[in-house]
Length: 123
Image (cartoon, rainbow, N blue to C red; front, side):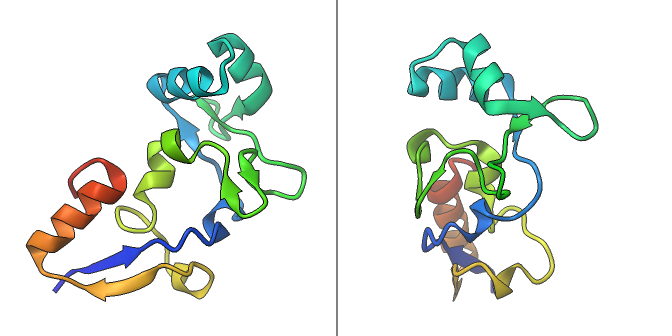
């Protein structure tokens, strides 16, 4: 039986080291949301990925996501797909130790529906 992880919006994932890669479409959507040009968005909010093949969100000095405001995501309604997909479509060993998502045993059909609702795409 599949396990669906129900996000509690604890923002622990917004505080982990790493990089949130951005597609061109995500940059355009985030720029519109922030009401800035794509050029200005790139200059203010992105950095080159570690493999130098694309752009990722900048981190704050303390390692948090640049869009984390207290306990809330400032771009929640338009957040990148990588953020939407965690922890159901990707995660890493031991993520449960810091992530507060609630694991639920669900049927395969309910899993597909829940993941679609949470991520906007099918598993």
